[in-house]
Amino acid sequence: MTESHPKITKAVIPAAGLGTRFLPATKATPKEMLPVVDKPAIQYVVEEAVGAGLNDVLMITGRNKRPLEDHFDRNYELESALARKGDESRLAKVQESSDLATMHYVRQGDPRGLGHAVLCAAPHVGREPFAVLLGDDLIDPRDPLLQRMVEIQEQHGGSVVALMEVAPEQVHLYGCAAVKPTGDSDVVEVTGLVEKPEPADAPSNYAIIGRYVLDPHIFDILRKTEPGRGGEIQLTDALQQLAATYQSAADAAGKIGGPVHGVVFQGRRYDTGDRGDYLRAIVRLACEREDLGPDFKAWLRSYVTEEM
Ligand code: G1P
Image (cartoon, rainbow, N blue to C red; front, side, top):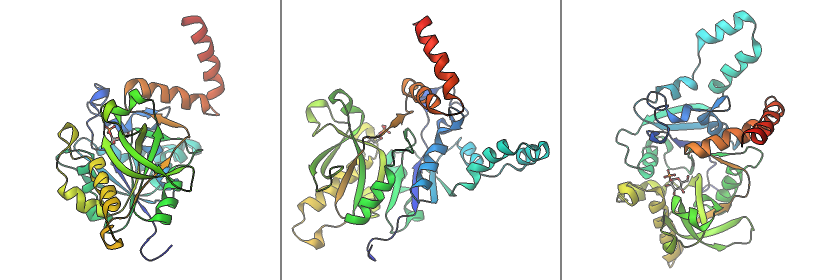
């Protein structure tokens, strides 16, 4: 690693969304706090960042998001009640989330899109590369993705997105990348990006899943990025500009912000973004749990045979 490739230590987690797809559950509770089995969805995401060596976590929050801060803080009353009872295992569960990472919070104020949320991180991040993790995607810790992305960023500089091949009829739900191969079978160079394209305009079936490692030049671009799809400032549009600048520059000096690469993920990903996916994620994760899985699977098997 050279001077120009500082070590990545900061993760940014946008969490200001209203969670309208889960109303009424999200009327007074942030969607990020909905449990996936017995842990709030957001804790899986923070654990993933920490697992990749990113111990400094900035959450972009908004109104009604106080429970997020409370979850990653100490709860002395509960801790002393459990300690008095000698309930060590539950005490450990309570303390786990407050001991995970160094947490920071900033409010987005006006929710003007993912690009705008990421721009809110600029004062905290400074001029270092950093990661962005979207809370609706959970990545199985047994299939590490972010570590690989950090490695590729350290190797090539610039920015790295996580890509997954999806069925053509799914492409309109994602940012979609035009790519060319590299020497690594799981890595592509991104030559262009389109946010949620119509099937006819999709350059490929490589979809961005919610993990990014970004060069800080992205902030300079985001400051000038006009609202795009859905009237929102799109991170994909800013990344498209980074990729285009790099591709079209004739000399090294013009390649500001570096290349954009994609790591093609083939591991287990759980989507918690809508109700159906959320239910599937819970069932899959519950089945895999050592403590709950055996009983739950036996019940599920008989439920499916008898009821369906
Ligand atoms: C966002 C991004 C999109 C990306 C997706 C991944 O969209 O804008 O490019 O593919 O996350 O989950 P959202 O799902 O927030 O609409």
